[in-house]
Length: 357
Image 1 (cartoon, helix red, strand yellow):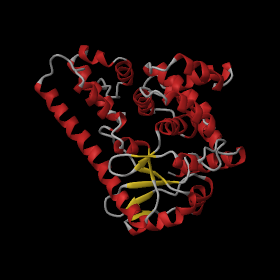
Image 2: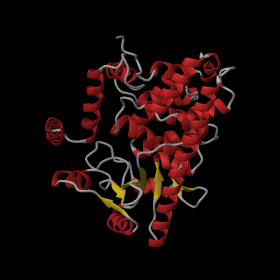
Image 3: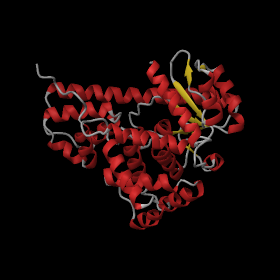
Image 4: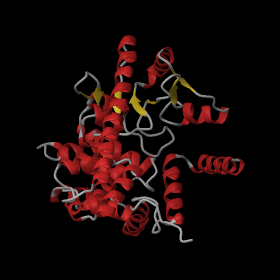
């Protein structure tokens, strides 16, 4: 019997991301497949925004209309759940008089930015001063969040080498909070100033603080192109594209982005963020900004290698995805995160864990 291919159609998603108006020409099966892959990539909020903007096939049968009703319900529920957790954190931190800043997906929701619509998050990320980590952990403990059981190596990995506490899970709701004291690990090659990030943070509706526009983009860039997993991270590039389009409308944004990239030592991640959001999604960037960032890129052979690796693996797993390319990017992210001896020891330990499981 012939096996049905039910793998999410990432090439279709990339095609539509580049030109949302193409949604109007999709067949009913293609449009249904687009919903599938958008859900798989955690981009239902983006898809619904495009549908609301008028990008929808001229005719959709009742069963497909029913699917869209479900999509709207999911998008509302995802965002509601994030806003509830933000409210609970605000209550905890305010009661203790502790300063804190929302990061990444939860920040997009709190600031009502385009990437925040229908955001589905695995955890809520917050930034607090390093000297108040212990008090922050104690406060969250009092409000139901606790670090799970970890072996001594993992405890040391988080508390001595990384930029965050071990994940804290709520005892009732099972929501997860990641408490950061920096945006990159202590062992990383780059060390952007957390105090500078905090000094320029802005307050949004609801009273919570988020990073300023330039820092929000730079954090997203550093997370994807220095410290994170590139393979399958299509949503992260969609985030960068949406942030650059929204903030780029401001008169001073591009100047601030260039200035803060240099100030925080994040010129290389900024270069990659602009390069690949433009290559993948045609993000509009002023010519003078591109000229200025050209000097921040790697040597041509490295640039060509990164182009090949990123564009082959970033959209998501498919028939075109190379496991060797994904492995190369995985090792690269750890190489940038740790000194060589620590890296070898860490990867060996992770490999042994994999064999045991």
